[in-house]
Length: 391
Image (cartoon, rainbow, N blue to C red; front, side, top):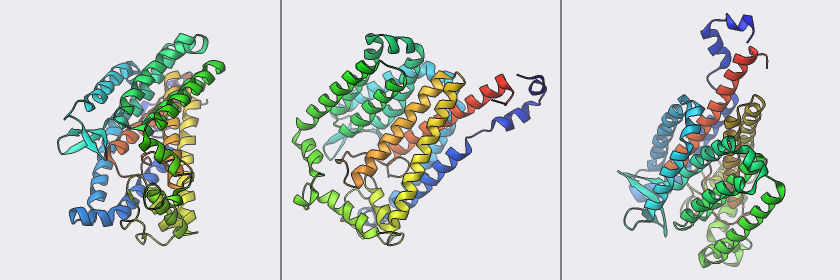
């Protein structure tokens, strides 16, 4: 730190450091706002039929967003050092909760999947908690055992066994989509951590083979994986959801039919306000709306990657791995959801971060964004303390 920086008032240093990464916070706020509008629009029909209140799901999503902001604010206040120390404990607690779901009578089953743990009048999806927790744990592992990961087989396989246990518990629910996101994020973090390429390639091939076996071993999963190739072959059964989504995209054309004017959301497109909210957005706002949202997600992911790169450059290893993991998770899940909506990928049952209806997903994403903002803040503080703000 220079003499000029040393005598600078503390309040001035705080202003220079800045409480938030403005561009990232703004982009996330815009996506959240668009998501609330689209949940209100996409759910108005089903909410009115089921509850008599057209904006029932909107008010619930707004409440989830408020809770998510509070949780994010709390997470942002906690130093990253504390997250690094507590990563293993958080993972153990999450694994216990995943196991509790499998106890008859404790987990809540919806559409044949037991993924929700009742908490009073609400239900919490434990797999959404697992995503940020696993990223935190792996980021800490890469800091503690980075050299072993880069030079030995055991250093790489140990965290992969943990990921395998997580995947097994998720498959028992079953939640194949969460397995894909969790496993891919973990493999991406290991790759960025410097694992040997030949070993990485072997494990990727093995993981891909196991996922393929898991997919074809279940007629339900196999039907979902192959149905997207030609949904029009069975448009009233296995291809129904996708054909309705494609119709929504076709009706949207360039600028859409207008907010609230979607026809597909009126009991044609199943899960319109959750997994397929992007299709409703495409119908109401057209190609312009689709490109805007895709660019916003691209900006968010790219900004978090830049935060991770800056953290790595300043020697903040945990912050760098954490930011990379969050970017991989969010980018991958958004890519899969959008690909499913457009018929480019098989149906996975994954939400679109910040936009789809769902309290668990929204709150987990809010905490993850807060952690990325915390990385940016601590990296900036480190730069100011060591270089007087001229880094």
